[in-house]
Length: 283
Ligand SMILES: Nc1ncnc2c1ncn2[C@@H]1O[C@H](COP(=O)(O)OP(=O)(O)OP(=O)(O)O)[C@@H](O)[C@H]1O
Ligand SMILES: O=P(O)(O)OC[C@H]1O[C@H](OP(=O)(O)OP(=O)(O)O)[C@H](O)[C@@H]1O
Ligand SMILES: [Mg+2]
Image (cartoon, rainbow, N blue to C red; front, side, top):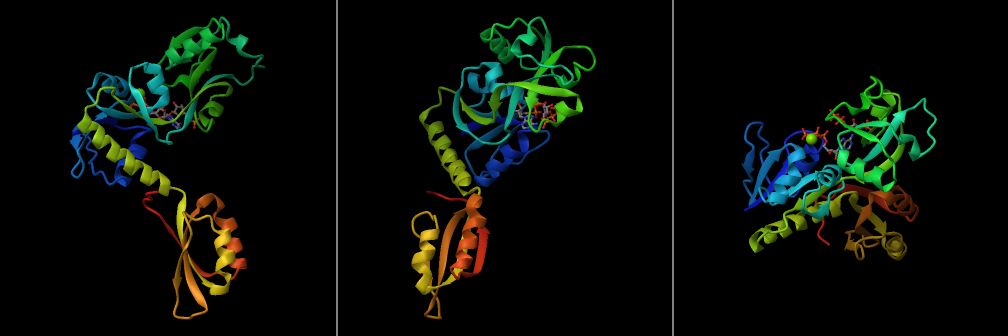
């Protein structure tokens, strides 16, 4: 049995639960039970505050965990990064009141900065030879300059709208962050096997994201030209139709180039184009 620590509620929760569910690992998210066993996979889910996830994995209370990179780096716990999960993307930035004309990092010399990430900030300031007064607060960091608690802040930014509504301007991006799958360094063979099965499923889910399965009817004489337009997995599947002059072509398309390719297919005489999402893809 493998034990995973995940955030019990908050910004990481929904995407974490979706990832498990898309990998067909069933777990009920109970409000009261902090440790829940999957009904169809050898996995136990431990629901924690994100602050406690790095330590629980480093100490072996949990074997693996899903946590923001910002929190993992801040805690400085000794665990390995197994996978980057691509969700909860944000950055840790320095911001100051927008009315100030920012001359560069030296502005922070002798200034008071409010943050929930003192270790990351301290390291950054040291590297850049800036002597600032770091004031630790656990929440509502963005309001501190407005109430005279600090001169600037160091906090999470995503869309930037929290900064705007607090009359702050982002002046330095210190680190980028996304959700990480972290792991204890000393997992036994059996746990590694379960983990590998999980990673295989995660990869299948990820490969299918942003991909569409496309089916169309096309005149047989255009097969060559149509095939050249399609960047499918290998070559497209071609199925004969009752009408001997026509065939059905099936392929996988990347969502990014989808409309461009569909346009070309129509020009080449493709008709009855059907598009469906793909749940999983094993390459
Ligand atoms: N606006 C955002 N956009 C994208 N990702 C974010 C955003 N805010 C936070 N995150 C990411 O999600 C993680 C969890 O954020 P959340 O606000 O839920 O933390 P928290 O309040 O500390 O939760 P907990 O109660 O578990 O301690 C952050 O550490 C960060 O990696
Ligand atoms: O750049 P933005 O898109 O505005 O996002 C940034 C904000 O998001 C997070 O807070 P959250 O909304 O999770 O609330 P919290 O402070 O209560 O955790 C973070 O602490 C920032 O305040
Ligand atoms: Mg927290």
